[in-house]
Image (cartoon, rainbow over all chains, first blue to last red; front, side, top):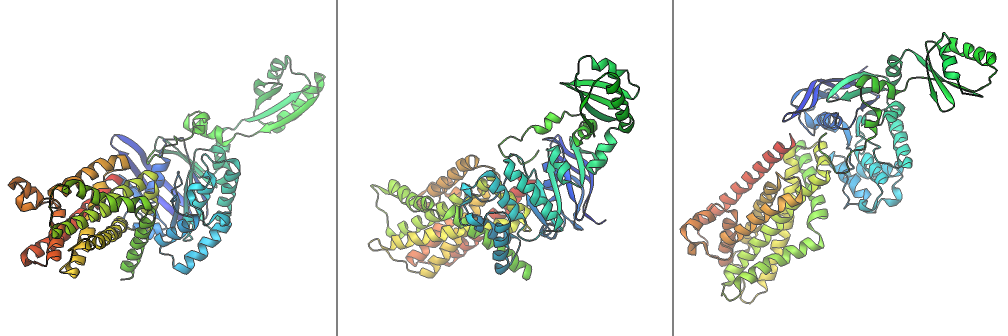
Length: 324
Length: 246
């Protein structure tokens, strides 16, 4: 597979703060790659270096085989950038924003008008094309920012926290657009602190914490590597006094009660399920529900970083931050 | 050659955008037209001023405040809103971005200077002996003052930070640069200060064009000084922005 982004020993230091520490990454053409980490982990600094907006303190970055530090113009021509805060011009109309963005990428007048029309249509903004962006909702501004990043048909799209703070409808629309763009051949590099988003969208995920990459793999492999033991959630017609009885089963390692449900940690679910059916029969109980639970990406994240998943649910401060 | 043309088109695109959203706005045009007149009236009440002094002074001041004042707001505003990052992420050099930003202020400076020139020519007894030199003086002044505006605002990431130094520098220039008081009548220490201010050379070139009394050496000094100031302000602006970015 061809690496469209490659970094080696990428480091960024702001005074005494080491924002990104010896980052080695490879992002392959055609994939959706996610950089997952809490606020302040170094995600925005990384994306700013990868897109040539900030110079690294040390290390190298190649984007589509161009060194972003030494050949920034050629490298930037291949990419589209969507920052964490929508940075379109509020004072201009949606149409003017798109045609201006096209001008920055050297798109011809005929082509820029054609593309602007197509993108406004694709992003559901055609009817508001002449309106000033100041009156747009957060979700509409986000869509327009993504449209502006796509105006020159980039090979690679960078999205920094694309869905942070959006309503459910806009969030779903943007996630589905990201998938659609990827199926059209655009490589997507996104940062997120939503574990669920990384799980749903990304083919590979890098977990970053305190400026360092903790691991890189596909979400499924990360989940699988986290916990070899399996979980079963079972509910019987009665639950009183079951905990101790269930602990007595040889196939069960641990039991915890969650309301009227019992969560059992087992070595092998396929062996445990018949034993539980037998257990119910012997105790004159009926099984109301039974589910096998796989470890989630959140479990993998917690195990790999040692952080609480709650920290990932903390939104960024509303004030724009240049750097994490 | 194609790359140069491409860069120029991008710079013009930035300038047109800036002109549209920052400069050519009703309140800014009103400010640009009224402010120099008010300052001039406040200072000249009770004094008799030669019309040949009034026209260059007003035109230089309108260029200084037109090209420079809005320019020193436009850049920090764009940085505070994050829209400057849009320019940085695009395949354009920082120099091209700054050329584009300065061109926006330049066009507004030219517009206000021409407006003031027309208004001034309506005053009784007002004439411009050498219109071509006057036009050249307007262009050079707008170029210098727009570069000055970018330079002053370059280190700042927000408007409230940029405004006090920008205003202080411009007001000091107006009073020390021969706009109201002929430099020859100033104390020698202030005359020295006047010679390091670009507005001094802008007023002088416009005065020579207005009166038609051209002194070759003084004219060449004015032109060279204004070009040098433009280049220095521009280079310092690029260096300062680069420093704040990395």
